Amino acid sequence: MTLQERDKKHLWHPLKQHQTHPESLAITRAKASILTDEKGNEYIDALSSWYTCMFGHCNEYITSRVYKQMQTLDQIMFSDFTHEPAIKLSEGLIKILPNNQNRIFFNDNGSTAVEAGIKMALQYYFNLEEKRNTFIAFENGFHGDTFGAMAVSGLSVYNGPFEDFLMDVKRIPTPNGQNHETILAQLEKITSENKIAGFIYEPIIQGAAGMKIHDANGLNTILKFFKTKNILTIADEVMTGFGKTGSNFASDFMTIKPDIICLSKALTAGLVPMAITSCTEKIYTAFLSNKMAKGFFHCHTYSANPIACTAANAAIELLQTDEIQQNIKTISASHKQFQEYIAKHPKVKTARSLGVIFALDLDTKMERYGNLRDKLLQFFMEKGVFLRPLGNTIYIQVPYVITKNQLEKVYKTIEESLEIV
Image 1 (tube, helix red, strand yellow):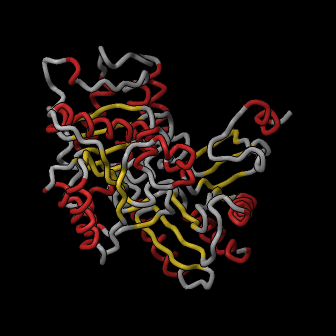
Image 2 (cartoon, one colour):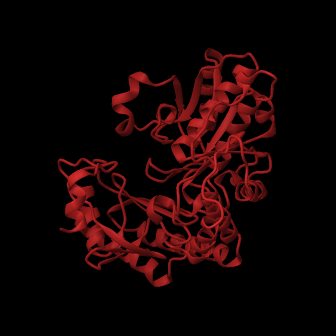
Image 3 (cartoon, rainbow, N blue to C red):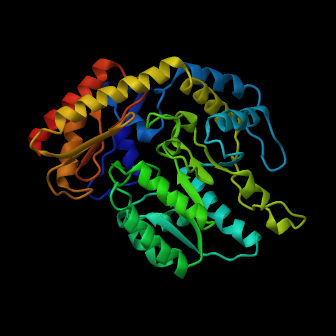
């Protein structure tokens, strides 16, 4: 019996309707940018496995460090103990994060990083004896699948069955370079009528919305508004963090920095799960008290797992090497060239790129998980390229170690796919 056949007996996959899509491709090996299935077929991982394996699969620099750590310290509860990998990671992150960040809190994944950020904001004001119960978020944003993260997300395809159970969130449009005055007027009204605890946002680019890029200057103006209102800002950098936008973090593009930052995915280079919620010293100080109840009672069993911290330390070291930084610049320039070329295609509505992220919108209406999307996905896989369209958006987020020939094959496959649209 094949792995694919055995899979169907007991497993329940995410983001999948098993009634209509019962098959899942069995991958047995991965190296650098290549995935290999149980039949020996190879696929270019043009999505870095959901934006995690940015340094390539099974990167020996990272795996060797993790293997060594596994012989020394595997897991320890972080509420009562500390260890060198976590301390080193905090030091390394603070050096590359926006300069107002000073405290590191560990989580398990992107959703729980956001969940912790939301709870930090709510309890920050609670500890100051100021009750605030409403958040502001962008339309069509996505921040995860736990309840707080769902509440601030704006994609009903994920949240529909749960919307009656979510906390109050007011939504605003993303800035496009022309609408920020209208947004500011909307914010004046929202903040005057509600007790706002925080504004959560995906800086510069909304991932699950279809890699939609918004205006950095407009976002900066919005963040400045929240500063004047003493409202905390939470940057969800789970997707954008660690070099994907061409800078270490998308927040680097704005002069106004967030109070809280959520990190995961590429943090550990896709090797093991871990996430981080960082914050300013001002926020951390609001939780210091002789009263135990004012502490932050939010905990994950595997918080600061030494193995995960070691993977993250190795990944941060790689990110800062001249080789990886040059690779990011090369991929970014290549994306720009392809963007200019493919945007002229009659079946392409728009094309855009930022760092190693590229996306195009097909000039046709299609369901997010409809037949045409399935047809495109099958075409890509048959061509040996793993791409996963988001509705009528085809996007790329390639590993930093992808070769020139592999990247050219990705571009060629996308162009060829337009013939079946």
